[in-house]
Image 1 (cartoon, rainbow, N blue to C red):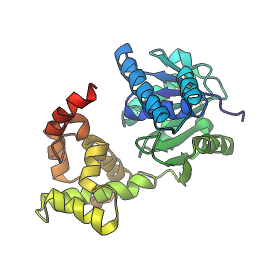
Image 2: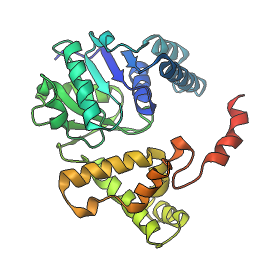
Image 3: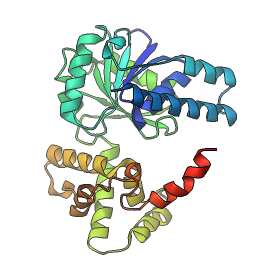
Image 4: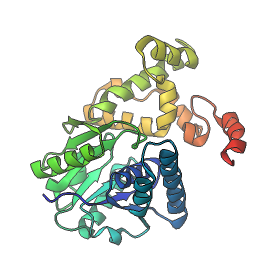
Amino acid sequence: MAEIKVVGVVGCGQMGTGIAQLAAVHGLNVWLHGRNPEALSRAKTFISGNVRRMISKGRISQAKGDNALSLLSYTTNLEDFQGADIVIEAIMESEVAKKNLLQQLDRIIKPSGILASNTSAISITRLASATSRPRQVIGMHFAYPPPVMKMVEIVRGADTSDETLLATKALAERFKKTVICSQDFAGFIVNRILMPMINEAFHALYTGVATKEDIDAGMKLGTNHPMGPLELADFIGLDVCLSVMKILHAGLGDTKYLPCPLLIQYIDAGRLGRKHGIGVYDYRDAAKQAQPSARL
């Protein structure tokens, strides 16, 4: 399989924007797709700000930063992905939505193109079944935020070819990531272990074992985790945590993966985490205090 030179990314939220930035900084031509011009404008501003900060902190040279920004193209039209060597989808964690997207991309990108999913839990084999090229479908799960976190979890579906696996691993290594490989079972490696821990932390809070502060402090100070599980859930998004727990329960069939009722209640109340200003913790006052400095 030829070297990957052009990368398409679908989804200009936090994950997709981070993946696009990462690819451009490492010298690849990138197309970033978003649903509307407003979302793409926000993504462009976000990436530009990040790259400028990398330059100012000496992490990359001015020339490399300018080159990265020049390699980025933004589009609302999937047809612009015709020349992509690989397309990485980073849309909502919905099997139906991802299958629909992959079907569209399958008809658009060149026959040799790879379709990669950033899913954190959904079966790659099932996603691949929606396409005519299951040998070229693979999981490429980035940790958030992609430019910072050092791991990429690669998941091989039942029909993923050796060539697709090697090309995807080579791309992740070009991004200076450590590659871990998982078989195609619900949750893969990271979320198979992480999400039940987060869910158990919700059970501890739900049943009154301890306060949220003490649960998080116990895990940070007692197990050397950089963030407590409830704080981490807010960072990830409680809706994402619930989605993964449902996938684990459906895929593995064990009641230990049933989502905690408190997690469900918080989501029903619109408490989705940092992105909504409130989750397990309330971030709204902190956001208000940060607004004046953000305008400087």
